[in-house]
Length: 89
Image 1 (cartoon, one colour):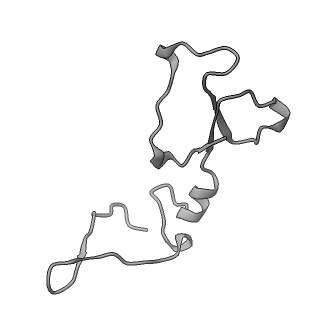
Image 2 (cartoon, rainbow, N blue to C red; image 1 turned 135 degrees about the vertical axis):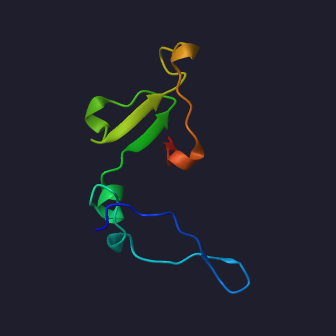
């Protein structure tokens, strides 16, 4: 792999951006892993309004509890964008 990659934008003859499609297994990251491998290691996020017993929680998933049995201090509440990919239960 090359030492440095330059950001690239593909355009057609009219100047319209072309968005190529490919498979995640053939796209490589800077740390020499393919995107498919990276996506498999990403953490899940669950936001819950009630307690979830530790035995029922999945490994590798971050749990955020809101307005449950003991409400959190507003200064310690983290905000998440919908782009994070969380699910509300």
